Amino acid sequence: GAGVSQSPSNKVTEKGKDVELRCDPISGHTALYWYRQSLGQGLEFLIYFQGNSAPDKSGLPSDRFSAERTGGSVSTLTIQRTQQEDSAVYLCASSPQPGTGNYEQYFGPGTRLTVT
Amino acid sequence: DQQVKQNSPSLSVQEGRISILNCDYTNSMFDYFLWYKKYPAEGPTFLISISSIKDKNEDGRFTVFLNKSAKHLSLHIVPSQPGDSAVYFCAAKVSGTYKYIFGTGTRLKVLA
View 1: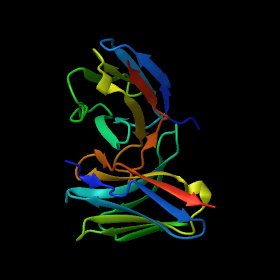
View 2: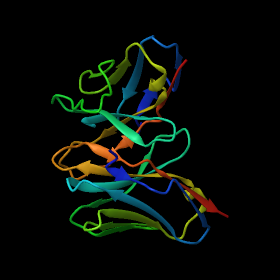
View 3: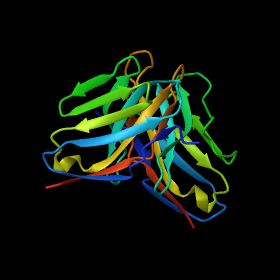
View 4: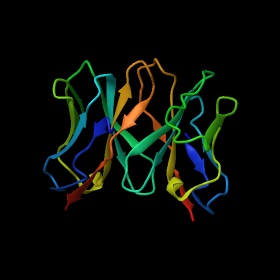
């Protein structure tokens, strides 16, 4: 079946511009995560959506970052007034209904964001 | 404050030998641990996991060991194959949540 997809795969933007990154999770997965990986770093948690619950936004680095998940499916991560330090690979992951004992996350290929 | 640490950024192993990847954590509030493998230009893929109430889980060539008293996790791959060459991340799930903390990764190179 189809995995997690992300678009665009690459994005180059000028400092100060806004960008939107899209994630299509696996159908039926109720949990959706956003992470970012800066050069030489591990995966940094950004935000987590679970069903209709309020998202866990504790990893968002500043108020320039926001995310939405519409209809419990597609998610968009928005970065306003981009800065050079926002350059990273942004990864989206989804996972099945919690409580099933399956904690595995399924990752998309990522969006490489470069802020010039 | 890195709660999940992979102190070896890289590891080289001969084909057929054992690869041992290590992970240390500082928070006792983790209840589940996972290992992921990542190839360049791809997202991480799940390998193996272990509950905090266990000390070992095995799946084929992959075995994960958990030492709770030492707050140490390790992944053993035996025998190692060239296709295992990738970056390996350990991840820990925060108890009572579905939030995961990832390590910085270890790049494994299996030499033919």
